Image 1 (cartoon, rainbow, N blue to C red):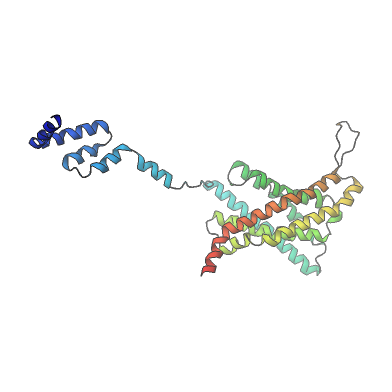
Image 2 (image 1 turned 180 degrees about the vertical axis):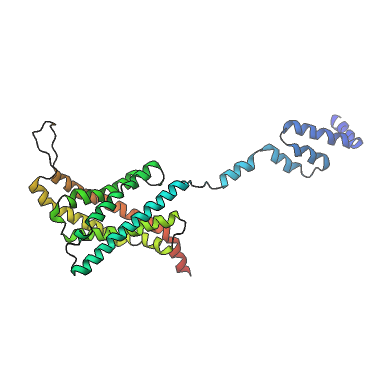
Length: 294
């Protein structure tokens, strides 16, 4: 009986029924202003209006999830500084490369070429310590530990081995790692410079992720051979070693320390080398695959 009465009421006064329905919906969904208007004028948009009222703010949440977050780069001042730093370092290693070539052409031999580039090598290799600071303050998004290890290992070899043990400076192994460093650093600093300027030539990118395949083993071989050549002189002279007894009750054997440094290359070199192989595949892989398809 109740249902029949309601049906008759709807037939007799349909406008009353249509006017009360928006009131109910507005109480259920107070945030939806368009819902009432949609029901009053037309019943067809009801489903869409209810969906929008049931989930207010859904479109904003979806948009925020879909939109990728932009990585924050260094500020304008930091970028300008990094560009200047990398340009100076590129020029410095170019000076070293030109010095090697000129000395070779003048002497007609590659023996003893280290003496012709000793000062600029020490200066610019030591200047690479600033890269650790760049990572520490956050203007370069790289690992402080990894950067520190790579930079300090070269600084150590430059000062604590090659500079300190003058007998090894004429060894061919010194020229081996100096040549590898020089080519690597010219390419690396050029890569950083053009990347900061957002105008990176593909040739430099390709060289950055290709030449290391030969240069990295070449440099490591030269470094290990140089340390090995220094061992007899270090053992004979007791260079940088501290023996007991002393007031600090502390001893240090530099000879043993150098041997441990050489051993550390065994686990570290493969990790760094294959990391670069993976980076090469990641950066250049899609380009090479595309060229094969064409």
